[in-house]
Amino acid sequence: MGDFKTLTDIVRLAQANLDKGDWDYLVGAADTEASLRRNRSALESWVFLPRILQDVSKVNTATQLLGQTLRIPVVLPPIGSIQAFTEQGGSAVAKAADEFGVLHILSSSCAPDFETVAQEVPGPRVYQLYLSGDQAWLDDQIERTIASGYVGFCLTADTQVYSRRERDLMKGYVPMQARTATGTMLDPGGVNYQSTMSWDLVAHIKEKFDIPLIVKGVMNPEDAKRCVDVGVDVVYVSNHGGRQLDHTLACIDALPGVVEAVDGRIPVVVDGGFMRGADVIKGLCLGATAVGMGRFEALAAAAGGVPAMLRALSILEREIQISLALTGVTNVADLHPGLLVRDQPLRPSHVLSAFPLLEEGY
Image 1 (spheres, helix red, strand yellow):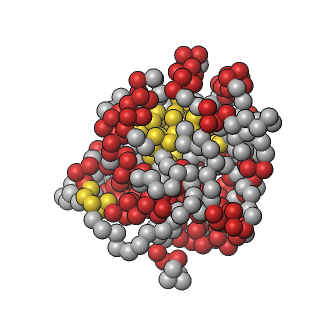
Image 2 (image 1 turned 30 degrees about the vertical axis):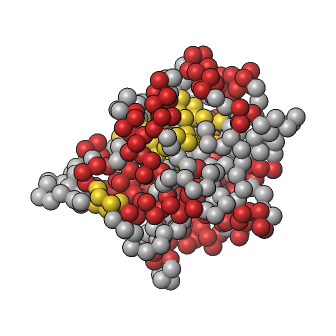
């Protein structure tokens, strides 16, 4: 399971291992899937303007986030129903992240639950919670998160309501997390607490609890500024992989405005279409501290659980090292916007256009 030569091999095996419903859930998005395509197209529109004659015999890919040293500047984001892609679910991702040395954000909409994962797998990680109860319920969840040893707490702010995903609707596919009241963000009485989230809730968390707070789903610079003002510890730029609001700006294109608004006061994480080492370098050039790679995570998990995820991360690390050196930079902390310019994508982009050899039958 862990002897792949390329990331393309991993994607091919993931597709072979998954049934049509789970595959479409993984690669699909909301409505027309324009946000998904735009994420990838924008990444392919940013191209390198490298420097030469720099001594890059040694490169450093490590970075710091939430007091943790990441071996590469990558975060494995929260994925609902990750147990559809690997039998051990969130525990498998936690094991791979801990063994390799990156940060994992565990979704509340997956199995096992966050306390079980904390007991089964040592190592720092963040817990992401969808609201399915009132403030007292939330407070209890955060207290248990802290007691379980999580190094951060994440609120996802772009899921006020669950989107329409036509791939799923047309075949009657129901994601695992949507088969429970918690998964649909409704409590047993039918209340959608996720839609009631507000800045007051963020302020309450910061005032009452001593745990770093990540707000995920930030796209607008004004929201980024407000995150800083209310004490948020990490701003996470994301359009949910195109799975929520259709026709949003690509995440990498939203990133510079958010970075400018934050003005170095807190770290910025970004996701949305990032699949390869060069993509990670682009995100860091535009100001991100780390890059979330959700579909990458799920594809690797589906290809063979923990061994495949470790192999995928190793290949990704090598891609990052090569791209870093070939831009003429020795440390990810020294990447900057001057190494990128905009150009036209070479061809129409789609969710897996980072793996062109798939289409050529390799």
